[in-house]
Length: 135
Image (cartoon, rainbow, N blue to C red; front, side, top):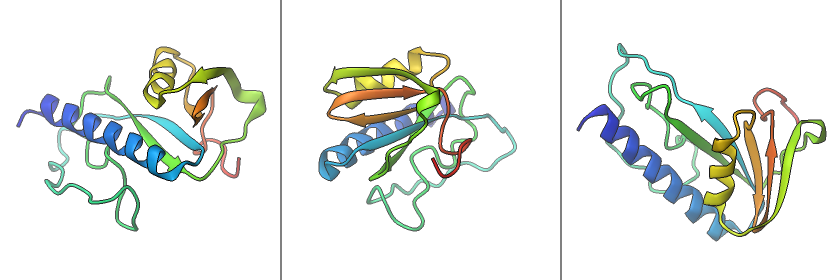
């Protein structure tokens, strides 16, 4: 399987896991945007597919995706938490009924690094929990 196809499959799997988790949890969803970098010397990722969205060994759909094109963007889903950074809020978009619409809006905004999503509300941020621990 080519690197491009592997990246595409990881993105599709990641999006499906995001949607499944948000539907099942009914909680606020915080999604952090992560740009994947390419490292040609790294070994190929494991062929196993996680059976759940959580677990001590699960590192997300982008784990092992180091050979992906640096322009490829993925998201990390964190459920049950709300990212709080009022000074870094870019936009609050009420009436956003689909998580995918919220993620696409973030991807289209070069300053967007994270979103909080709850059915009906999408909030974009110019920072993320990795750069602001404890927020």
